[in-house]
Image 1 (cartoon, rainbow, N blue to C red):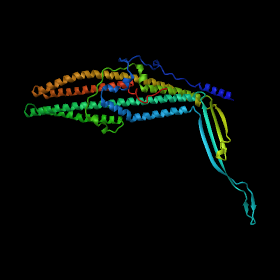
Image 2: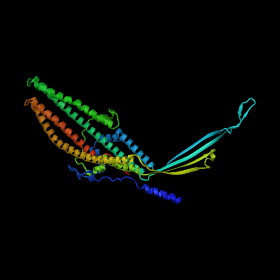
Image 3: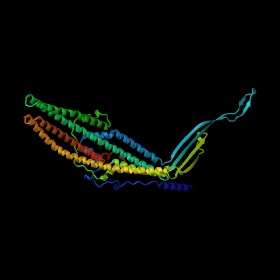
Image 4: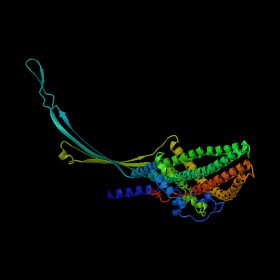
Length: 483
């Protein structure tokens, strides 16, 4: 008997090793259409440490503190963490399917027995029951166990899919974290840009107020017509009108920053209301090679894990076409006294083999359906890879454009400032009309705002590039584990 059990166990294990469905192999770069290099250069190796905290290169302590707050308190991240915990529990449930299920039960009660149906008739003709009733105790205890043998890998493929889903959820959490960091940096830069443009507007406001006073004085002195005064007044009013819009833009960015850090707008960003310069960064940025996107971008890795899960589910569906084996057993004991409950124990063991004979093609259709889902998952994976490469290329183009514009606007700002100084001096001396002065002042204001915008565009492009490269999750505590 002992040898028969060992033989049966060995046979079961042998059959269990034959998992239905295809084994998953990650697609190679050639199948995904990944080029050897970026079209706009790059290729400099980039390490995980730099990617993990890329925003620290801006050397802005306020920004660093905000990102720490966002990572700890952002509610989108909290939701993604909850989904990750759900996926982790799903894996535990899948692994539990390999183990027997054991249930225990116990009951107790009292039974009444009348003791017979003896009767007699008294002198008055009444029927009297002479039986003697008796109460007895009854106790029962039992254990039931069942075990589904993983003959054709339905359970192992299900666990494989659950592991892949868990890793995909981890990478989805990482992707949410990347998005939050990128959005926070963007709003922070926009806030600093609004503050810089407000500073420029207030300085222009003071200069234009002086020009208006000069035009009014010259009008009173009879040196010019009222046209100069009205033009100066209009120019000042136009500058005044831009200030409320810039203040609203600043407030919108600060409110968004508060929500991104998991706080209510208002006091959470009070310290940011003090103006500060637009962040700056090094001109050297490593981009690596396109193949790095498979390793660095969490959305790409999440899509790859989803493809692995879909592939494993083909085996789950295919295993249902084959016979299933379940083993069950129970142990029971019944007694009229608790102390004697385990004196007599009975039990049995059953093996049940089931095979679907006819189902109208439903199970075969499920296999084909899952194969189609796997094809779709591969297409999504490839699309995610190509979109990631597109993001990097676009970010590099935006960065190059911002840097080229910043150089030209710096030249334009310096020339416009010199021209405005000379125009103010010549107007005061009566050598030019106010229209010429107004044109030079407007040109200077536009050049200063354009230069500030180019500065912010450069930082935003750097943030876009690092986000496209997949930076910001490499040192997270709950980093996905694909094992």
